[in-house]
Image (cartoon, rainbow, N blue to C red; front, side):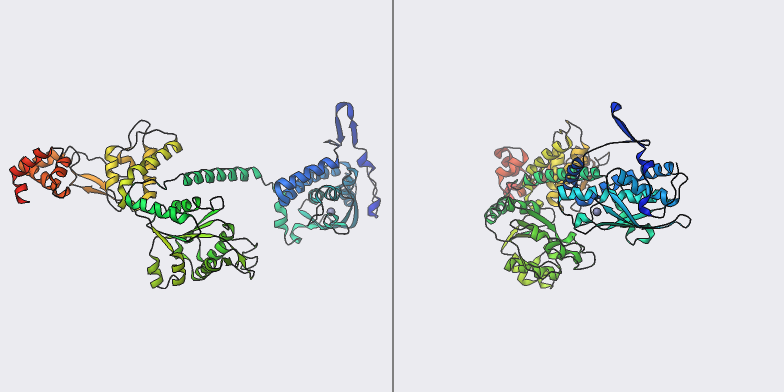
Length: 568
Ligand SMILES: [Zn+2]
């Protein structure tokens, strides 16, 4: 039935709406027109809202309730059109505020409504009295910092947009939930709001679950990489040079002395730095690793020392830097030579005074951080060239530790290889038989420019390419290497990681063909082998005999016979 148009906004009858409500208690249903409704306690809603705010934070919870209201507003716009088919635009529109009142959510008092459906123009100003959401804030959440009638606002936006057939946005310009005198809303077409795009983001569902899964996987990968790092290859090795490093690290660990780690890329500087931290009194505190070369120079200061809001374009929030986050713990500055001069100056001050200022801030903050720096290029040279402050160099160079490259401690390689095999067996759920003898031999003759990290990668590749219960061959360790075919040439990996032909390698059965083909005599072969063995054993007959698999007397006899021993 139709309602007569009444100019007084407040006096429009809402009897047609209340008549739509049907309580069918025997059936367990309440109907509002064709919508099934629920009667639920505001207090239950309040507890729910508090839980949402506590679990998801205000911003996400706000979006959630705005969308809740939005869905309801869309349904009610449909209902209003159905119930008031022959009414004036204004009366159809007013069904929205009335439905809000009928449902007990809020009393709506229109202050000004301008509707021009032809031109699409809309302006609305309404007051909300006794909003249930304000009540919720007062009972459950306390006073908010911003307007709090979220679901009511979502409802108003949806109802009016559907009614106008274009996007209308309402904003709550004042709200009792945040301490204002009354709740007032203003609505106009989206284009007339400057920040419409930002606001309408709230109406887009924002599935938190993807983010949670993502974070979950990040946490688990961080955790496993942390476990790996903690149980990593520090201390694996028996070579004298490496043991010397370990002894120095153990000494340096206690106390707060700055440690400077020197060595080629991939020798495991971060692993050592972490070991210093884990062996120190700070082990329970944060360990923060920073690769100075990986951060753009214009961001490095903010990244390390923090930034105050507004310090530069894009600094929209104040945040602590890595030093503040590492306080009471340890910071590891890899590639420290890459620091820009201003960052060098601040670092020096941190080391000397234990204090810093964030970028764009004049407040001095004290930090208690142990610094472990590392570099793979010479800091002395950088000082000479004027790229690195001399005073900072002296400060960092209190306890320098040089970590030897892998090629200088090849006797540790089998142990390290074993370590990485175990690691990748469990990571890939596989069980190979380990390196073949040939593969190990190749590893022991390789130059390893990428050091331990390269060995780790090579072993990983080997494990991936090798089936269970098979040995890891040279070919699966190094890409592109091929077993020699019918020709006598073999491929080996040179110091640059390139596969090259090596005609001089006699380790395959083809050496016999090669010797015979070149008309070399047995006598010459025997002599050459004995001379080589003597050289390798520093002219010690017993040593050379061991190399050749002979007894000492047997070799001595042959040496004399060929005249080699008489010569020496
Ligand atoms: Zn409000």
